Each structure stands twice: as structure tokens, then as C-alpha cells.
Image 1 (cartoon, protein in one colour):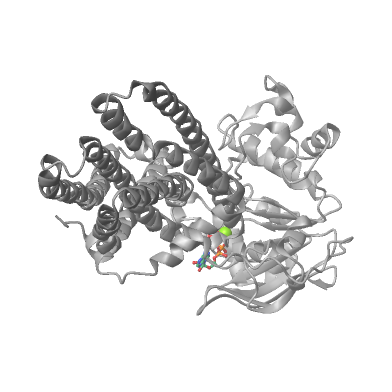
Image 2 (cartoon, protein in one colour; image 1 turned 180 degrees about the vertical axis):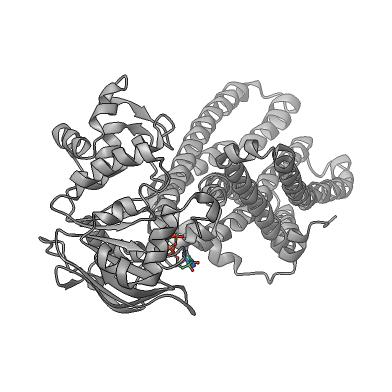
Length: 596
Ligand SMILES: Nc1ncnc2c1ncn2[C@@H]1O[C@H](COP(=O)(O)OP(=O)(O)OP(=O)(O)O)[C@@H](O)[C@H]1O
Ligand SMILES: [Mg+2]
């Protein structure tokens, strides 16, 4: 049965603390205790209204049908009708309240997930597939929401019914009461014995679902490249293998859930036993037929309620499997954004790197003792071979990464003590592959600034040399652009990105290979935009192309994480071999390999 390696490895895991996970899930329901309490009361009403039914049946049979007392008929029928209505009202109310509490709790959980997504270090997203993370919002949350409604809701209602039935049966005949009280835990024993399996089966189903999401997202995002390289069959093969794993996990889960139905079998055996014992008293006249009917009614009702109870329990265990994945995600250490609350007073935008070292992985330093100074309002270009650490400098400025030694100063203040949010407020950035969001062009330009006005948007677009092509689109600034700026050319998207970077009027502007992906003509237009955008701002440009570098007031040459030299283009060309190499290579034809 267990063929899948994924399942087998999960099976050998120690059984972690299930009650702790159940309590943690319940903690999200706690704020909605009023709805929960209301639902419990409504369930009590329903159970209270349904409980007397078999007894009323007994009276109908023994007193009216057999005893012949017809005067009892109208009050009995009225009672049955009234109780049925009360039961229905209670049932509807309980369902409504359980679902509403459950959905609210699940939404709090989903918000917590997004909150976590927004705070996790960016490195997390490089190490995990998008689709897998998305599955936390969909399949994992859905399993937990289901548990809120089914396990915590219907399970509670079923538990109340079971308790009520046991009590009423005990009142009718204490011996059967004891029997029922012993039977119920027996029903729960089976899933209880297998609870570790249930949880782990659910875990493997959820992670297979996560991998499916991961693969689908990856393939859809890479559709252009898949088509270009004719990799359709390869894509289907990858999917096929994953689907096999998912199927195995699901089938195994279904297999152990199936065992729960054994409880029904146990019930019917016990049921037959009871009537074997009762046969003599009934035919010997010791108990009435109505009594036997009422008892049968209670016992089969008990069976009907115990099944949802065990199922609620199984649902709960499945949710525990999903919750482990989800809480594991929520417990991933988030970005240390807080600082000590210092706010930065930035007027000139003077930047200084002082002996900065940095590493992505603890024992592989990427920058070593980097120092340079960018006077406020000037432009510095950072050049160096691929992998030299240029983007790392940008990541440090944007606080995507913290220095392991040294400090970064902004107008003389150490940015390390301010929060990342505060630092980013003062820095506008343009990446090589900017992501524009679903919305209008104006929304995208005003992206970084709350409540920006139309005139400011237009001004930013003007500076970024974007106005002409924006005006030429059908709806101007209201033109909708898709997730990945599908309706814009690379150069147009880049100019929108520049407008977005300066719309908040930051003192510092950072560009990492902002024009590298563009052809010469688009680059020329973007550079026009940039030139105006730089005015009155401190600008740091990372560029392969020298067109940007020529205009810089200063060039920092990085090599293997160290500053090799700092100076103007002319003087560096004279004295720095690496820099001269970099420049010369650009002048040569591409056949000699311009991209090292
Ligand atoms: N997220 C990361 N995790 C681990 N190492 C990284 C990460 N990003 C970059 N590095 C490493 O840090 C070093 C510097 O990378 P960086 O991106 O700063 O180079 P770069 O100068 O911008 O190169 P390029 O010109 O190719 O963009 C490289 O050796 C790279 O392998
Ligand atoms: Mg780079």
C-alpha cells in the first residue's frame, strides 16, 4: 500500500504533539467565542427538541395504539410538531453560527499568513517555490477552515447529541445507559489508535498538493521558455510523476479513513446482541413493544451521531496535518525590520559605506570591508565583473540584507538603527525586471506613495520621459496594465518603473542594471528619463553599459567583494587595469565575448 517514498518517510517520523497543534488551531476560534457559544446553545436546543421523539413514539404505540387512549393523540402530535420546529430552528442557527465563527477564524489565519509573507526575508522566496507558498492560502487553510466547521462545529453538536442520548437512555433503563456510555469511547478508540497515521497521511497529501501548486506555477510562469524549447512533453512528465505521488497519498488517506466505518459494524453487532438479550423479556411481557421501539430508536440515533463524531475527529486530525505545514511557515523567523524606532532626517542624501562586510550564507562573505562615499546630489556608478557584489551593495542599501560588519550612513546617520521601512522611505529603486501590478498606469506610478495626486503622477511620468507613450495609449494614465506589464514594451515598463521610483520624491535613487535588458534605442529613451530623474538626487547606478557610467561623478570598481578603486572614468581608465578591461571589452564585437 505504502509505495510512495514521501509517505514512507513521513510514517517514520515521531508523532509530534497533536494536542498542542489542536490547541493552537483553536486559539484562532477563541475571539469568536460568542458565535461558538451561541452555536452550542442552538445545538442544545436542537438536541433537547429531538431527544424526546422516541419517548413520544413509545407513548403513541403503548398508550394510544395498544392502550386505546385516543385523548392523548392531539397533545402528542402537537408536541411532536412543536419539537420538530424547535429542532429545525436550532439546527439552522447552529450551522450558521459555527460556519460564521469558523470562516472568521480561518480568515484571521489567512491574514496572518499574508502578514508573514510580507515580513519574511526575501531569501525565503528564493528558497521556496511560489506555488507551494500559495498552497498555504488555498489547500492548507481550506483544510483548517473545514476543521473549524466540521470538527469544532458539527463535532461539538454531535458530541452534545451523544451525551444527551446516553443520559436519556440511562433514565429509561440504567443498564442500557451504562452500555451506551461504554460503547461511545469504544467507537472513538479506532481513530484514536490510528491518529498518528491520519495526521501524517494528511501531511503528505498537503505537501503533495503544495508541490503540485509549485510545479504548476513554475510551468505557467515559464510558459514562454517551455514553448520556445519545445518542452511540452517534459512538462507533462514532471506533472505525471507528481500526480502519482499525490494519488498514492490520497489513496492511503482514503484507506485509513475507510477503517473508521468499522465502528458501524461494531455497532450492529452490539445492536443484535442487545435484542438477543431483550427477546425473552419482550415476549415474556416484561417490557412493552413501545419500550423496545424507543430503545431501538435511541440506539440507532446514537450510531448516526457517533459516525459524524468520529468523522469530525478524523477531520480534526487531517487539519492537524495541514496545520503543521502552515504553522511551520508562520514560525519561520521573519525579517528583523524593527530597528530601535529611530527616524532618519534626510535632506542631502549623502551616503557612506564604512567598512561594510556582508554575507548571504553565514560562512561565505560576499562583500569585504567595502568603504566609499557618495556626496549628496551626486551620481556614483558601481562597476565590476559578474558576481563582484554590485547587486549586494543595492540589497544592503534597501536593507534586503544587513551588513555583518561596518555601517551604512545616510546623511551621517547609521541606518542600522532605523527600521527597514524607514530606510526604504528615502530610497527609490529601479530593478532590471520591474514588476508592475494589476491596475492602471497611474496606480503603478503612485505605487510607493499613499494618496498621491494626479498632478504628481503626471510630473513623475514627465521626468521619466514616459508621458508621450502613456498619452498615446487608449486610456492614458487609466490604461490597465497586467501583472507583468504585458501591454508595455521593455523600455516603456522601465520608464514607468523610473516614474514610480521618483514619485515619492526620495533623496536617493538606486538603479540596478535598469537598462541592461533594453536595446540601444529604448536605452536611449530610458537614459533621457534617468538624466532628469537624477536631478537633485543622490544616485547609485549599477551598470554594465558605459553609457551610464560616463555621466557619473564617480565610479566605484568592485572585484570579488572588495573595492578595487574609486575615481572618475578618465582617471580609472588610466590606472585601473580591471576597469580598462571592462571598458575595452564593451567596445569589441560580441564574438569575443563581452559578457564574462
Ligand atoms: N541570495 C543569494 N544567496 C547566496 N549567495 C548569493 C545570493 N545573491 C548573490 N549571491 C552571491 O553573492 C555574490 C555577489 O553577487 P551579486 O548579485 O552582488 O553580484 P553582481 O555583481 O550583482 O553580479 P551581476 O553583474 O552578475 O549582476 C555572488 O558570488 C553570488 O553568487
Ligand atoms: Mg547584479
